[in-house]
Image (tube, rainbow, N blue to C red):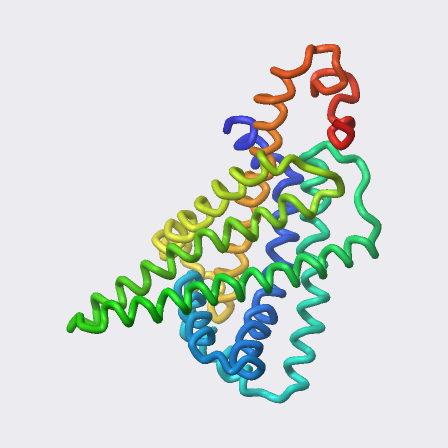
Length: 289
């Protein structure tokens, strides 16, 4: 843990995190709007539509009712607005993955980044994968909610049902976050990375993100964003939360690399071998071996 924690205090990490957070903030609302539009207007899937709104209420740190109300109004908007949302999503997604790829390549010791066109292509593919993963986990959550209502229909306490339903959504949020982190860690670097190191790190990072969201909500009053930023407090709150999430993501990436090199390569190769990171050019031979 120690080298990865020290990594978070380097200047470049915060430059990457701020860039990722700004683009994540720009792409969050178009992405949510597209999911809601697909579920209600294309699939006519009202149960999934309500689950998405509940997940937004659950995961957003503040201003949930305002955000949910505005998204609900936009879903009923004209088709041109939905097309603009799709174009905005494609544009901002590239901004999210561009600094992420640079950061992950540097962490893994991969010297060459993708070209801008190739980065745009992989960014679009990851955006599609993320949307499909979201729909998959929403399907599971909707099915589980229906099953929960069927099994606990006899319970006379609505408050108890709300608590159980919220706990179910919290449980579903964890594997969804893990799957997103795994897709980013595995596909975004411009080189082959070991699945057996990326998967557990994605699981750890997903759990850390969920735990950090609880801590962030509890400590949010201490930041006094409303007193400092006034009507812009909601935007600042969401942007700062995206920044914290980006730091967690970069921390997980560095942790997976530290574990890979220190626990595997150093034990399996002598010091003079090109597989050992202590040897000259050792990191450059990752892909070949």
